[in-house]
Length: 272
Image (cartoon, rainbow, N blue to C red; front, side):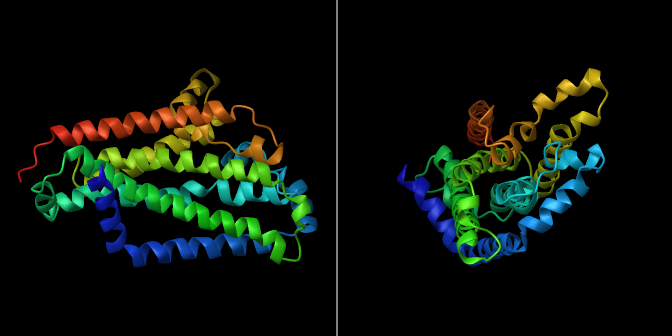
């Protein structure tokens, strides 16, 4: 078990500059987003957006609400977190193990007294650690913005549901990470990247645009992990409806893929 943490620590140290740069940029980006919010301006825009076609409103849960800080974050942060953060983690996860195999650095690692499952979980732990660090920084930026920016009063922010939304986001990003990770144990770099992005687009299209499909095939939405990540009810209506069941579904999905990744890599023929 200790070796798993050693692998994660080593990988993080090797990529520390890039990790800090990306996390810093994302944190400043969302703090800037928070500074853009103006309750009066966006309350007026909300009425205007109600006339948008369903294809557009599907991107943010079917309805557009940006009149308060929480609903603003729902639209501009959480609804597009797959793009701001998910793509990064899918890219990193899908390329990690294939890169080591193709560059033959994996031979050095696996020739040591280390089990393959420890190697796989060490690689995964590296990405999860970065993800939690990133979400923590963004969360701090979003939380302190109402206290330092003049246009938002802290008393108007529902910090309880905002905290729950960030917790929800962890499980969403973990499901995306696990999707990219399993392909990394199956294919080389190019194929792993292609399949990972293909799965991302496929799941996103099904989970967000199922309302545009013929009614008889709309149930296909249930196979998309994006269908189980919807912060609209939580942030706009302060409702926990389906919150816990969705977290359970995302957790089960991620766990199955992680176990499958370990087993696939354990059986894979890699000369050392």
